[in-house]
Length: 373
Image (tube, rainbow, N blue to C red; front, side, top):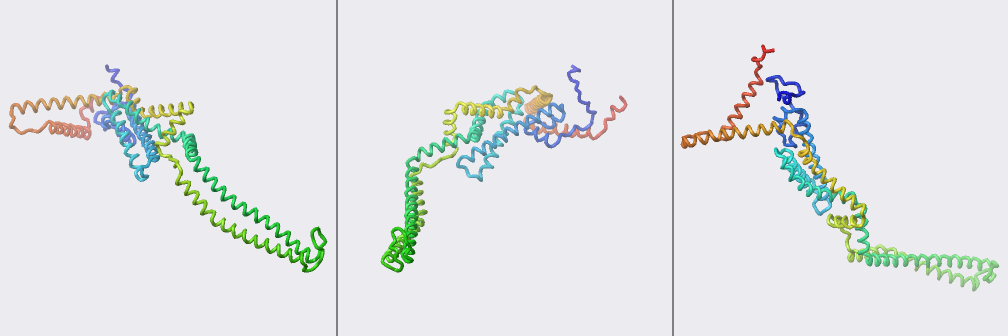
C-alpha cells in the first residue's frame, strides 16, 4: 500500500503554499469543468490531461461555430446577425461538452454520441457544400440552362436580328462607298478625256461628265441616308437590348443558390458519382469523430488522481451534510421551538472555519517538526 501511494514528485514540505497554475492552464481546466483548487494538488499528468480535455472542448465548439457561420451565410439571414448566432452556437456546444467532460460518472458520455451524430451531420453538410462546390455549381447551372432554354433562344434570336440590321447597313454602306469611288474616278476621266474602257474620250463637261456627276450625287445622297439609318439603329440598339433583357427576365426561371437548393444539388451530385458519394460519407464520418473527441477523452482516459480526489471530496461533503442534518433533526425533535441555524448555514460556517485554519497554518511556521530532522 505504501508503494502504491508513493510518487516520483518531490514531497511538498508541510505548511508550504500550493503551487499556482498559469492563466492558460486555469482557462483550459475551466473549459474541462475541473475544480482548480483540487487540481493544484494533483500530479502533473492529471493537470495536462485536464488541460487537453479543455482544449478538445474549445476546438470542438470553435469548429461547430465556424460551420454554423457558413451555414447561416448561405440562407436568408441578415449578415449583422451572423456573428451573434454563431457565437451563441459556440457557447451551446461548448457547454454541452463541458458538462460531459466534467461529469463524475462516465455514463454521462453516452449521451454525447447521439448529440455528436446530430451536430456532426449539421456541420458536415456545409463542409460538403464547400468542398464539392464546383460540381454543385455545374449541376445548378445546367438545370438553369435547361429550364430557360426557350427564353435564352428567344433572347439570342432577338440579339441576332439586331446585329443583322447593323451588319446589313454596314455592308450597304461599304458597297455605296465603292460606287462613290468609281463615279468619282469616272468624272475625273470624263473631264480630262482619258482613254479608258467605257469612257467617251472627250475632254470637258460633256453629257458623259454630267451623267457621272448626277450618279455621284445620287450615290452620296444614298450614303447620307444609310449613315442616318445606321446612327438611328445604333441609338436604338441599347434600348432594344434592354427591352429584350426585360422580356427575358420576365419569363426567366431564376437561378436559386440558397442552402436548400445547394443541398438538393448535393444529393444529385453524390448519387450520380460513386466517388463523390464516398467522399461525402468520409467527410461526415470525420466530422462526427471530431465532434466526439471530448467523449473519447472521457471514455478512454484512465481514472486519474484528480477524479479520485474529487470523488473523495464529494463523499466527504455529502457525509458532512448528512451528519449535520442528523444533528439538526435531533435538535428540532427535542426542541422544536428553539431557534437554530439551518443545515446550509452550519455547513457554510464549517467551511469558513476550515479556510481560516488552513490560512493560519500556512502563515505560521511549522515549529513542531524543526527538531525531528
